[in-house]
Image (cartoon, rainbow, N blue to C red; front, side, top):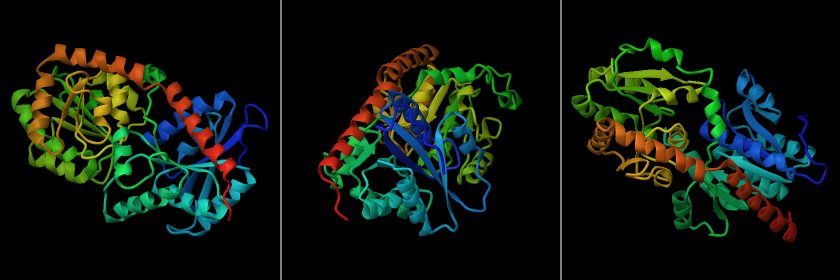
Length: 395
């Protein structure tokens, strides 16, 4: 069994976080940041629990998280739909004397639903937003929305997401907003990683044209294809512009084919997954988020922390981060012409981009503090635990 790190004696409340991932995703980065800012207060201790398919080599990610003095447990499932996973998580919950369950993602939320029914545990469910890779994934997110109605608290990352849940009938007193945060220490990671070695290998790397960055998984809802529809219009006005796609995903082959068909292979570069994304931001002149849906985009906040202007679509919580005409440009989703016009306007005005970048960095430092986020989250924990203490669940 894992050893739970307790900083301040037996009165500390124990929280199990449950997530299914094999890479350092945006939600996982936000979770680790939250743990690192809440746990030193001495009131809460965390067990980071991940589900993993038995027989597959575990990703080095789990060992990397443990190496940062965090308590980690990996619960194995023996097939894709394994009912014994519920029992395994329940046994771990009881053995580690956990006080509260926190779930991230559709599979953990469905597990949370069954654990809530069997144990009557206090449960906080995070909703980070939907993806739409295929019909199966859409079904999973539908089931997630049903499952988290039984949670004691549902945490969204933006006011826009909270508004959607309220329209769907969620009780207002159950839905909380905890906006993502960005840590200035993120900047320190670039000291030994810039410039990225891959950048010097790009065709035409010595050209003086602007470099655009699109960072994130290649899924339909991220809008890479819309950007590729817009980019020829950009090149007609700014022929030296280049773009790097950082990330992987199911859309990769289709996007490469689109580039080839449009003759843009020397202007659009596919860099794949980058473990140290921070090393890329200083090399970029502009960051573009052509998303069709978003929660609260970490990429926008990271770009702004590095003083980079952002062009993004008006979806989800994007306007809560990117202020149109202040820190960047916000355009309608699925509108390639509007996207191209905004990118051209930015690339044609270096002084304007500098102004937006300066304001963006100031906004992130002032409004997206990890310390404030941790304090708000502890208030939610306190409320949920207090409510369950007054009204214990009867099984």
